[in-house]
Amino acid sequence: MKAVAEIDEKINEKQKEIIRLTKEHQNCNTLGDEIIKLRDEKYRLQLEDANREGSRLKLEELESFL
Image (tube, rainbow, N blue to C red; front, side, top):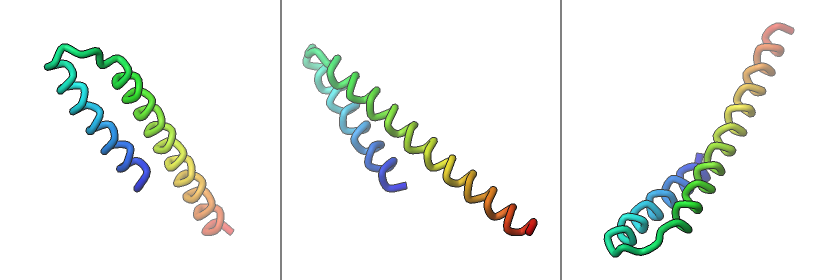
């Protein structure tokens, strides 16, 4: 899923930024919050995708039954 891959890339970028800020003894709480929000969004997208897939499989089962 393209959206999940994009979120993963954003998370990776922010994690690298946190490492850089930590080495410079900078506050990285905001980046941490952003990563949590991105992970929540990723989870939501994955859940929606799983639900769509489950619905698709149920429809296929019904079609084959009929």
